[in-house]
Amino acid sequence: MFARSTTFRAAPLTIDEGIAYVRDEVMPAALATEGCIGLSMICDRGSGRCITTSAWSTSDARDASGRTMWPLLQRGGEIFGAEPSVDLWEIVVLHRHGISGEGAGVRCTWLNLDKSELSHAIRTYRMAMLPAYEEMGGFVSASLMLDRATGRAVSSVTFDSGDALVASRPAAQRLRSRTGQDLGTTVTDGTPGPPKVLAISAE
Image (cartoon, rainbow, N blue to C red; front, side, top):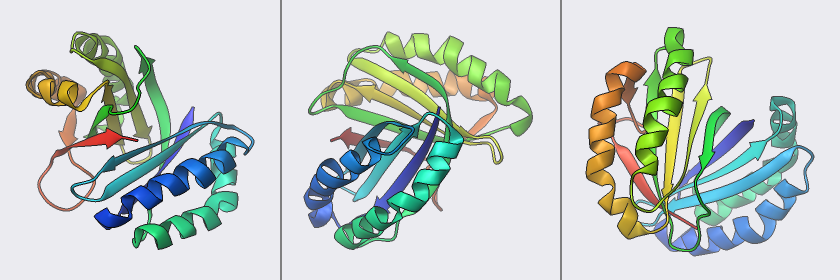
């Protein structure tokens, strides 16, 4: 599977309108497009960072949809008062342990992987990190998306509540410390400044 994520650094007061727009207009349009198999949106109300991710059955379907979805993306930029940043991914790991609902929380970790060791990194994520996530209270799902050309990747781990997300932080930090060297990664949030992990709420 493949994905396209669109990130806005939105003005916080525009987030509710933006969520409604994605739910009522963007999602139906995406799901009606050939090859689309899902869409999600996560928001950090404190910083205004909003990420919409659509999943596609093939890279051709994802790329072709970019042209048809462009007007909707432009309208989203007008609502959020921000220019969009678009990333293209391959979904290399997807594991669902349950179903997320209202109030779920997501921890996203942006990574730079060694391009010569991508297969090893994917295997480590699947064999070592997924079992550890399943032991964390409130765990719902995890995914790893990758840009093979650059080695950039993002891990997203969903919990059933904000409290579970916060409670998982120490275990998640220990897991990153334990597996980071084996993954061959550095951690970055994809923007200038110190490396960091983003904890965000799912809408």
